[in-house]
Length: 368
Image (cartoon, rainbow, N blue to C red; front, side):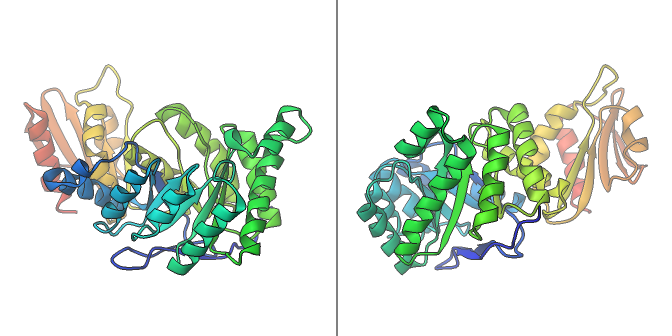
């Protein structure tokens, strides 16, 4: 199937916050979630500068939206202050207490996420919707398989309704409330930890609604297994035109979530290209620690604002020959380091430390 074009919502675009659009013919937006609870100390002096640099780094890597859990009123104050300092749109993730959502809307927070399974009675939803409408802030209705409204959870447990259908019904029921309240600035996510449930729920929803879809697998696991499970679920949906924004949920860093999201979109030719990293897996022939070098450089390389291929190879066998298509590459042979472009070695030098390797590589990278 090919999904109909979804309607468009705008995220941010006020004060100094960058505007991001999802839906319609806009490119699929990558987002991630901050992994730690912030304090005001994280915003002060050098810590605050480092935090801003890291968020700017995520943006350079291709992240369009950054979400924060906001479990208490104090966290709303912290997120509000942070939102006034960075240009990336920030999303507040709210569970249980609608008053926290109301407080977040006093700041340049660009988006809310609420869960219909636990946000509370209709009058509480109405209060949040009313203030969000006045501020021009969209709301994502985030439905999770593990926190469905009680009647739907019971229907799944007694097998009178399958999990994917329950996810869709929860989303459509909440959208109906929003529609009655005159609020259409919405996106929807329906997340399960199962690949089949994720695919089925999003396919069913796309047949029944034009609301933009945030897609992803929840509780997907650590880096390797989580990336595999997200890829297995998201690629079929994206190939069918389903999904306006993605989050690759991993028990890993936000940077790795963004990298995984980029690679998934590039596999479907939906993302910005930027740098493509080609690196060999390393073996007993290695004369260069590709794993350590890639780990040190991946954030910088994925943040490059140019289309290029970077090769990080372990030995002369996999170096300039097999990576001759690379715009820039690095490898080792014996006690020497070789840097090459398009298969031609342009620099050879003895390497005694990681710092020397990094310095030489950076000098050549800056010439690209």
